[in-house]
Amino acid sequence: MQSKYFEEREKALLGERYQEYYQYPAEQAARGVTVNTLRCTPEQFAAQIDFAVKKSPFCPQAFVVELPEFKPGRHPYHHAGVFYSQEPSASAPAALLDVQPGMKVLDTCAAPGGKSSQLAAALQGQGLLVSNEYMPARAEILRSNLERMGVSNAVVTNSDTKGLAKAFPAFFDRILVDAPCSGEGMFRKEPQAIAQHNEGLVAQCAAIGHDILEDAAEMLAPEGVLVYSTCTFSPEENEQQIGAFLARHPEFELVDVNVAFGSEGEANRCGEYPLDVSKVRRIWPFQGGEGHFMAKLKKTAGENGEKFKPMKPAKPCTEWVDFAKQYFPQLVECETVKAGELLLLLPKQAFPALKLRVLRAGVAAGTVQKGRFVPAHHLFTAYGTQCTNQEQLTLQDPRVAAWLRGEEIEAVTAQNGWCCVMVDGFPLGAGKVSGGKVKNHYPKALRNLK
Image (cartoon, rainbow, N blue to C red; front, side):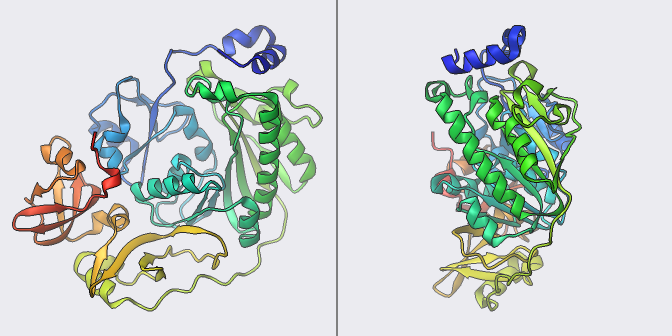
């Protein structure tokens, strides 16, 4: 089932190819997981996981899951941030950016966090990731997901891109613009997308994408790379968007995405500003994903950003230092800053003192309560493998399910005091051992209660 406008437009553009291009390989939407390489390699994941997967063609770290009954959010490895549940083709755009450790990277429209997780994994804890989301509720989901994935060097912001552009002129080496779109690639996955779809929505989304691209162009440093993507098929949001952008910005060039999956762009969708459609990529439903468009742009000229005043670290917190010496000795020298009562461990890469709504900068370490340091969940998801006191569980251990339900479990490997509860070496979160039991400090909102 499609909207009338969509069907008429696509039949006119595709002609005899229409039925083939919108042929879905199965009744259910494609499902997949993307491995968090901050935790393990894809090969290690495939060898250890207890459900069937096959390699995805869209990303080296992604797998296709063909079990219709699979509930990824309840799996212990999901809780431990080992994988992100993600429609297979959605893993493609972030991989195209070729992010390397130490880079400064921006995800402009980052919620719920799958692509930001990929970018963070590519950085391997080095450099800086700014993950932004305009909608406040979605920004909170983004923050929570990046914490679950153990990301330590992200700044999560809740801003429009104009605000970001003022804060980060010509700053980033890589930018991902996964633009808000009309969602034509979601028709099978989200039936409500069909009911909401119309020509006006396409025009509105194209205008939003235009503005975000303009702001992103200001934030990209010379020689930097920008990937623009959507999960829709409309010409206005895809080929026409990129063609018009290149016409406005001679300092940018279109770079070949250089991938084998999907199909090249469509010349009859370019409109007023033709481009080399062989360099952009489309993924159609019959090719194993729900639908995507991707274009890669390089900034060949421009001035470097102005020097900025970095966020000023706080004075060392005595309670934190004492706690870290006992449980996280490698973190004692980390620079910290206070956000209200919460102590944050800052990323090593300097960034501006932001006049934006910042939901998280670095790692939430914890708070001081009654003269003692009380650690936060994020500290253990980010640095749990470095904790000197650990309760080691395996995937088959019944204590794992009990822990994720919020129950107290028996202590076997951990000594009295704070500990990190691990499953197959992956951190689940914090517990506190006393009397041979591990008291559960796993956040209630994250527990498997159903």
